Image (cartoon, rainbow, N blue to C red; front, side, top):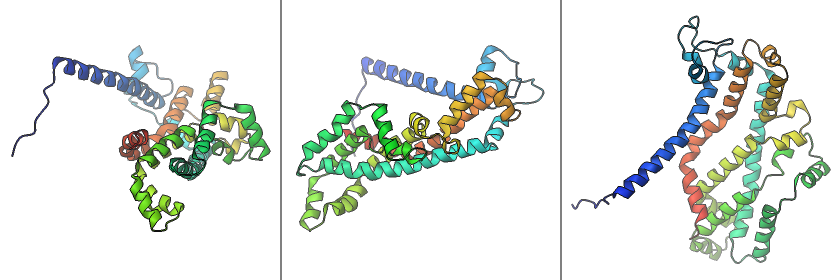
Length: 304
C-alpha cells in the first residue's frame, strides 16, 4: 500500500504557523489570566495582605504562611445562601430558556421562508428583514411598543423584543439554502406540505445550525442588561446582570455595605464570585455545543 504523500513545509510556512500559534497563545493568556485572577480573588480570605504584588493579583490564596489558610469559600457560601442571588439566577435562567425556545421557534420558520426560491414575495420578505438590521429604530419606539403591549414587569419583555435576530436569521437562511433542493422537491412531489418538509426533512439535517444559533441567543439573553433595566422595575423579577450591577454600585458607595449584607466575605471576593458564578452556565453549555459550532457557522455562511 502506497504511503500518503505529505506536503513539505517551507521556511515561510513554518514562520506563518509559528506566528499563528504565538497569536493564539497570546489570546489564550488574555483570557486565562483574568479568569484565574477572578477565581483566586473570589476565594481569597478576608483581610489577606501578605505576598508580593504578583501574589496579591494572581496567587493570593496559595501564598504560604497565612495562618494555615489557603482559600476561603465564604463568598460562594454567602451568594448561595442569599435569597436575592438565587432569585436573580433563577430569573436569568428562565429568561434564557424561554428566550431561546421563543427565538428558535420564530427564527427557524422565518429563515426557511426566506430560503424558498419560488416563494411569492420572497425579495420583499428579505428586504423586510434586512432593512431594520441596517436602520435601527432606537430605544424609545421599542420602549413605547413594549409598554403599549402591557409587557412591562413581565419576563417576556426581555426576550420578546429580540426574539428574531436578523444576523442569526441570515446565517440560518444560508444554511437552509445549502441543503440540496432535490430533497425538498422529492417530498413536494409526494404531496408533502411545506411545514412537513421543514419538520421532517430540513430540521433533522439542521442540528448544527440550530445548536449554533441557539448558543448565540442563549449568550445574548443571559447577558442582557438593557432590557431588564428598562422593563423590569420589580426587584423579584430582576435577573443576574441587574443584581451584579447593584452589588458593584453598593460596593462603590460604601465598602462595608456588601460585606455586612453577605456575611464575612470581603467586597472584592463577593464581586469576583458573582462574576464567576454568572459565567458558569455558559461554561457548562459550551463544551456540549462546540462540536456543532464551527460546522454550523461555516455551512451557514457558504451556499451550495
